[in-house]
Length: 63
Image 1: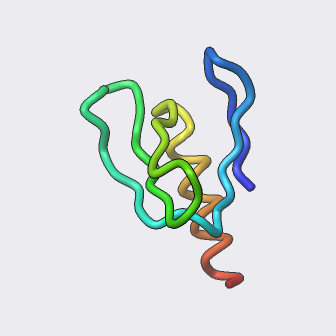
Image 2: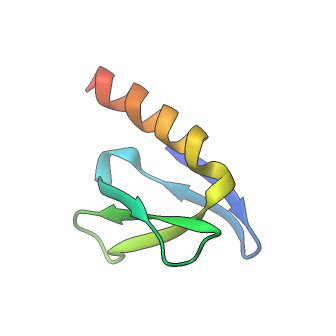
Image 3: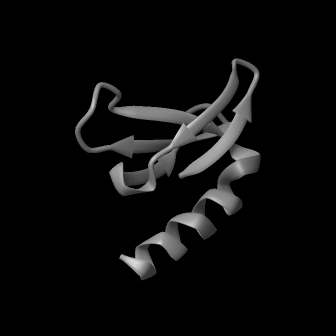
């Protein structure tokens, strides 16, 4: 589970549901896409990118 904070409050992403990570048209965020569930994608603040990718890589190596 990757947790981060936005102006709207605390958010969390289940790493097992991530299907892609991409650039955003908004220069202050990146996009995380999902499989299944109600939400297809989320915009995550760009300053969280390195932390998110490190956690995603670590999760992928374990699974």
